[in-house]
Every structure is written in structure tokens, then in C-alpha cells.
Amino acid sequence: YFDGWKAYDQNPFHPTDNPNGVMQMGLAENQLTSDLVEDWILNNPEASICTPEGINDFRAIANFQDYH
Image (tube, rainbow, N blue to C red; front, side, top):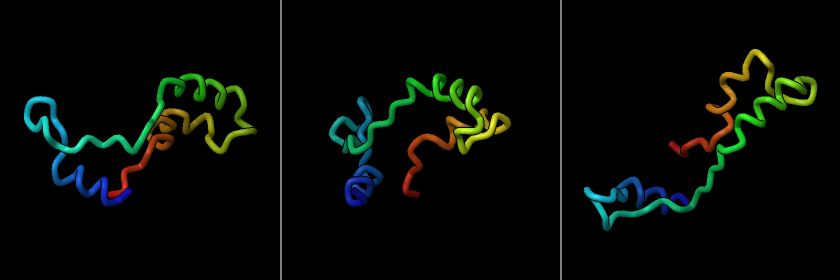
């Protein structure tokens, strides 16, 4: 995993600037339902570790955290 990230960091793919670079495909992150999860948290605060006051930070903390 980390070797893959290291290779990507050293030679990242770009469609025009570096078409032969490394494409990071070891991570799938679906943010298509974030709005539904946020609504659920607001409607069920007793069942969530997130608070209604912190709902605006949900998307920033729920996604994949880079290894850096």
C-alpha cells in the first residue's frame, strides 16, 4: 500500500503533463451519499458520534485521510 503511494507521489499521472505516470487506484471513496448521512445525523443525534453542531465538519472528517 505505502509503496504504491510512494510511487504515485514520485510520478503522478496527469492526462496531458504526465500520461505515463502512476495512477492511484488503491482507494475508492464514495461521497455521493454524504447529504443523506448528514440528514440522518441531524434526525438521529442520539445514535451518532457527530453532533448537530458539528454537522458542517462531517464531510471533512468522514473521508479518507491521506497517509501524510
